[in-house]
Amino acid sequence: GFVVVPDFPTTSSGTMASPAVSPDSSSHEALSSVNSAPACSPTSDSENLSPDELELLAKLEEQNRLLEADSKSMRSMNGSRRNSGSSLVSSSSASSNLSHLEEDTWILWGRIVNEWDEWRKKKEKLLKELIRKGIPHHFRAIVWQLLCSATDMPVKNQYSELLKMSSPCEKLIRRDIARTYPEHEFFKGQDSLGQEVLFNVMKAYSLVDREVGYCQGSAFIVGLLLMQMPEEEAFCVFVRLMQEYRLRELFKPSMAELGLCIYQFEYMLQEQLPELNIHFRSQSFLTSMYASSWFLTLFLTTFPLPVATRIFDIFMYEGLEIVFRVGMALLQFNQAELVQLDMEGMSQYFQKVIPHQFDSCPDKLILRAFQVKYNPKKMKR
Image (cartoon, rainbow, N blue to C red; front, side):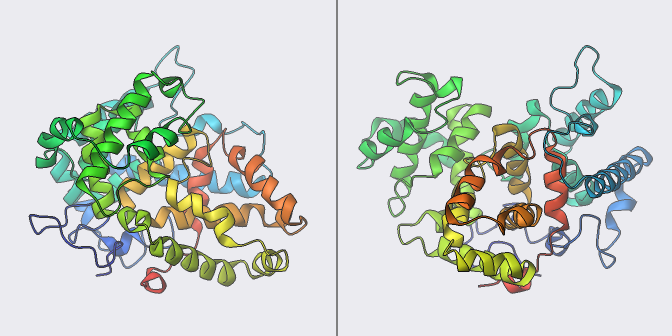
């Protein structure tokens, strides 16, 4: 079967444990172009689900249908909060009373974590739907670690030793750290705890991977991990992401992989939105001008954290494909406005308008992303 992360060397143990890659996972299904399971996918999932879980899966699929109908009925959803409460795991329900659904979600995720291997192997489809709906905040640290198999990595024991060493990248890292999530409490000020642990993790990584050393956008990814978990754990997850999710290729000094992603994205653009593509070209508005940061920071520098974190949840399970999907969904959603703007207008639009379109309902962005046609065959180098 096709594997999302092409030709990456296997980990030391010789297995590829990452979700983006795991050979036993139904990667075909992961790449299907529609949100619901493709007709050809084996129904293996359903025979492993309890009646409750089947009902939950049906509920999730129904929710998607409602959202879809809702999105169709309101092309311009800016400022509309009509449906913002409908998400299964709304991060902040009017929490005077934790709704049953939310309570159930907690119990359910507790079970998933406890029975991880079984869910991973036998309840793929439901797990994937749940992750697309957002991992509840308190479970993110552990679920992200489980998703990328970072729970017991030997490298964790080297971490404290690495911190005692010095790295040639230290000056660069210090300079960039001040620009990472400058608005976020945790990272405010030079002596904030956030900046200190961010420096530690980036430095440690630069020592274990001399070829990549330190690369600018990566601090945003590490910063997000540090908002969820202690530094040793964040370090392990980051090592995994670099090894198994194409990120290391993206961050290599040559940037060849970024070029490839941009090229692949451009191909989708000209196939799916030819009119917009022609407009971009007429204005010399290059794909790399707006999409580079999407790939390098996985939208963490595009959207506010609540939205970006939802995309990151999916990235942890499905790999870089979600970046292509969300990117195309954004262009589709905004095509009518963009074709009327010149180069300067478009730059402004990408910086000012696009980041806040889905603040009130990230679910709609995710839904649109999974309606995008994505053909993995054409994405093979």
